[in-house]
Amino acid sequence: MKVLLTNDDGYGARGLRALYSEITKIAGTIIIAPEKESSASGHAITVFDPIRVEEIYDNGNAIGYAVAGTPADCVKLGLTVILKEKPDLVISGINLGPNVGTNIIYSGTVSAATEGTMLGIPSMAVSLDSFTDPDFTFAARFAARLAEIVVTRGLPKGTLLNVNIPAVKEKEIKGIRITRQGVSKFKEIFHKRIDPRNRTYYWLDGEFVESDFEPDIDIVALKNGMISITPIHYDMTNYRFLGELGTWMECLDLNKPCEPRRISIFDTSQSEEAAASTVEEELSYLAGDSFFRSGEV
Image (cartoon, rainbow, N blue to C red; front, side):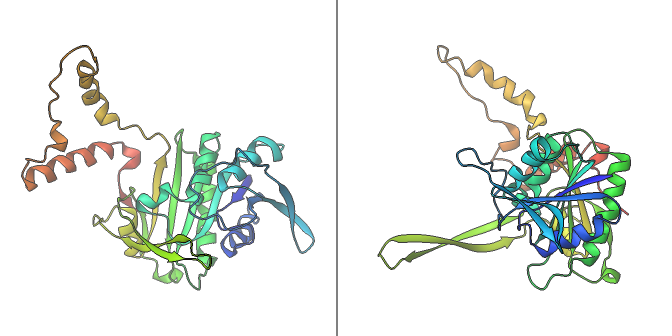
C-alpha cells in the first residue's frame, strides 16, 4: 500500500508528523505538503507564480517534499509530476482544529483531499478538535485503521471522507458516528485598524456559531465526544431543484412576457410548522442514499 500525506498546516506540523509515524507502519509513505502554514486556503491553486519544491528530511532520511504552494497544489503536483506511481490513498491532516459545517468550504485540509478525489485517488481528511496542546496519538492510530479499510473497500466515485476526532483521551471517546455535514458557520468580525503609515487595514476575527442540533450532524457528534465520519463529494449540484429550475425556462425568453411564480420551498408565507416540514423533507431527500444515512459504530 502506498499513501500520500499532505495538510494545510505545513510540512513540519505535529499532526502531519504524528500521522506519518503511524502510516509508515502499514504503508509506503511520502509527504508532499506546503512549506508554510496554509490554513483556510480553500481549493486555491497557484497559476501566476512558480511552484518551487524542496526535498525534506528526517534524521537524514528523505521523507517527502515541501511545496511553495497551496494544499491543492501539493496534491495536484504530487499526483501528476512528483510520484512515479499513483498512491492507493491520499490522507490530508491531521489538522489542528476541526473541519465541520460550512467551514469545510474554506478548509485547505479538506480541499487537499478533494483534489485527490478529483484526480481519481481515494482520499480522506482528518482533523483533531483542538487548537491548544493537542495530542495526535490516538487520531493518528485511528486514521491508520480507517486508511486500511478505505483501501480495501474503496469509496464511491467522487466521494471522500471528512473525519473529525474529539481531543480527549482514547477511553473517553464515546464511539463513532456516520454523519452529514452541518450548516454551522463562522461568524466573522473584522477589526478596523490603522498602521504606522496611517493606512487602514482589517484583521479577521470571530467565533464559530453552532446552529445544528441533530445527533447525526458532524459538529454535534463531535461535541458529544464521538468521532465524526462524513462522506462528502465535490459535485455541488442540487438535484432536487433541477426539475423546479427547469420550469423557469419559460420565463428566460426575453422576447416573451413572464409572471414568475413563487417556489414553494422558499415560500415565506408558510407557517413555521409547514416550513419546518418542508425543510425536513428536503433534508431527508438529500440524505436518502443509503451510503449517506446516519448510523453508529
